[in-house]
Image (cartoon, rainbow over all chains, first blue to last red; front, side):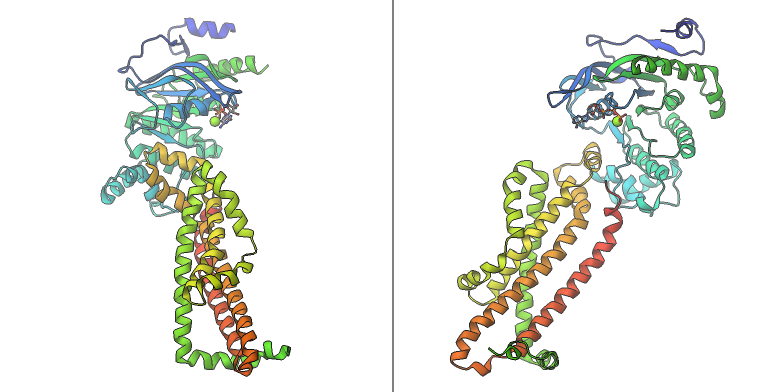
Amino acid sequence: MNTAVLEEVRSPMNKAIHVSLPDATTPTDPSANIVSVRGITKFYGSDVHALEDVNLDFPTGQMTTLLGPSGCGKTTLLKIIAGLLDSTSGEVMVKGKTVTSPGPERAFVFQDFALLPWATVTRNVAFGLELTGVPLKEREAKAKTYIEKVGLSGFEDKYPHELSGGMRQRVGLARALAVDADVLLMDEPFSAVDEQNRRKFQEDLLHLLSVEKKTVIFVTHSIEEAVYVSDQIVLLSPRPGRIHSIIRPELDRSSSPDDIRRDKVYLDTVEEIWGNIREYLD
Amino acid sequence: MDLAFILPPFSSVLGELTTLILRHDFHAAAWQTFQAFAIGMFFAITGGIALGFIMGTSKTANNILGMWVNIFASAPLSSVVPVLMLLFGLGQLTVVVIVILFSIWIIALDTYAGVHHTSNSLKEMGRSFGANQRQLLVKILFWAALPEILAGVRLGLIRAVKGIVIGQLLLSVVALGRMFRTFSDNFQFEEFWALTLILFVFALLFSTLIGRLESKVEYYAGTRD
Ligand SMILES: Nc1ncnc2c1ncn2[C@@H]1O[C@H](COP(=O)(O)OP(=O)(O)OP(=O)(O)O)[C@@H](O)[C@H]1O
Ligand SMILES: [Mg+2]
C-alpha cells in the first residue's frame, strides 16, 4: 500500500476510509445492514471459479458499489443477491432472512435495460405491478408518478425503440422504483449510455435516491463513477473474485456535482483505487 | 396423352374461372374446402405453437422431439398424400389432415427458434419482478417469439396449400385413369386448374396478410440480441 493511502486512513476528516472486512462468522445486523452475504462461493460448471468466499454487508439506505475488472464476478455476485442465480455455497440474507429466489424487497436494473419492446413506456414501468396483480388504473397512476420522477414526462406512450439509450435506462429505473422495493440492484446501468447523458443521469440518480431512501447495490467498472456515486466501494480482485478492499469515500455530497468532481478527496480516492487495481493487473 | 388436354390454354382457364365462381355448387365446394383448410390450420397453429414452446422451454423435450420435428419439416410429405387419401377417403377429413401434416412442423420449428432466442435478460427481468411460469409464458415469451411464430404460420400456410394442390393433382390423376375407360371427355381440366388458381390466390392473400402483421412486429424483432 502506498503512503498516500496510509495517510488517508489516519486522517480523521473528509477522507476515504478503509473498512475492515466481515468474515463468514461475523454476525449480521439486519437493522444496520439490510443485505448481508456470507461465504458466497460460485463455480460455473466444474472449472470456472467465479467467486471465492465473499463476505459483505450492505448498510441500509446506502449506495454500495461493486468495482473490479471485467470477469471478476461482479454480475455473478449481483445476480446471486437478486436470487436469479444459485450460489455454490454460502448464503444471502435480506432483512435478516436467508433468500434463494427473487423477492419484492429487491428490484433489478439491467445493463441492457430489458424492456418489453412491444409495450409502451407506461406499461413497461408498470410491468412489475402488473405481475403482482395491481389493478390497471392504480398501476398506471403509479407508473405516471415515476415516469415523471425520472424525467420522462411526455413519453408515456412511446415504445422503447423510439427512445435513446439514456431514456430507456430511465424507464428501467422507473420500473424498479415503481415496485417500491427497499433494495435496488443495478448492473452497470450506465454502460450503454453516452458520456454526457451518463453524468446527468448519475446526478439525477443520486438526487432521486436521496429522496426515495433506497439501498443500492451498484455494479460498475468505472472508477470515477464508483467514487462519485458510492458511500461504500467494494473492490473485487480477478478470478476467482474475492474482496480486495472496502473503501468509503467521505465526500461532501452537499456541494455541487462539479465541485465534487474537483474535490481533493474525490480525486485522491480515484487515484488510490487505480493504484490498487494496477497492482493486480500487473 | 395430349398435353393440350392436361394444360389447357390460359384463356380457357380464365373463362372457366369466371363461370366456376358464379356456379352455386362451386360455392358450396369451395366453402367446404375452405372450412377444412381453416380447421386444419387452426390445429396446426395451436399444435405447432404448443410444440415449439415445449421444445423451447425444456431441454429434455427438445432433445427428444427436436430431431423428429426437423425430420418431418424437411421430409417429402407429398409421397404420403395418396396413403392419406386411402386412409381417410377423399373428403374434408383428408384436407384437414393434409393441412396439419404439411404445416405443423415448420410452425413448431419457428416457434422454437423464437422462444429459444428470447433474450436471457428479458426472462431474468420477468423472474426478478416476480413472474410465475404462466406469466413468463404469456406476458414475455409469447410476445418475444411472435415475429418467428408469424413467419412460421406464413410458411406453414404456403406448405398447406402445396399439400392440397398435390392432393388434388393426385386425385385427378386417379380419377383420370378411371375416366379414360368410361367417360374420358367428362373430366374438366379447365375446372381443375381454375380451382388450383383460386387456392393460390387465397394463399397469396393470406400470406400477404400475415406478412403485414409481421412487418408490424418487425421493429421489436430487430431490437433483440
Ligand atoms: N453462465 C456462465 N457460464 C460459465 N462461465 C460464466 C458464466 N457467466 C459468467 N461466467 C464467468 O464467470 C466469471 C465472472 O463473470 P461475471 O459476468 O460475473 O463478471 P463481471 O465482473 O460482471 O464482468 P464484466 O465487467 O465483464 O461484466 C467470468 O470469468 C465469466 O467468464
Ligand atoms: Mg458484468
